[in-house]
Image (cartoon, rainbow, N blue to C red; front, side, top):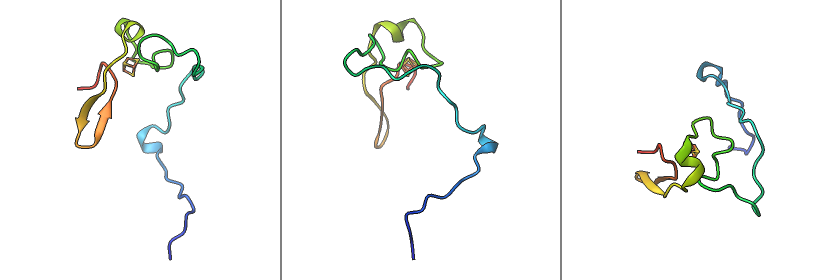
Length: 69
Ligand code: SF4
């Protein structure tokens, strides 16, 4: 019998969860460029100016990031 109880998984060998700094922007005042740039540790100048397009990176996987290939 299956239930919906979440299972705790030990991810410590993968470095655990990364806590992002900063605050989620207001939906009424989205930042220019990539909406994630104020909190992204990889952001660079282009991210602050231009919104990245959605590109397909896998069979059912889209990404909107200038670094996605
Ligand atoms: S485009 Fe990619 S690298 Fe740039 S801020 Fe957004 S998520 Fe980060």
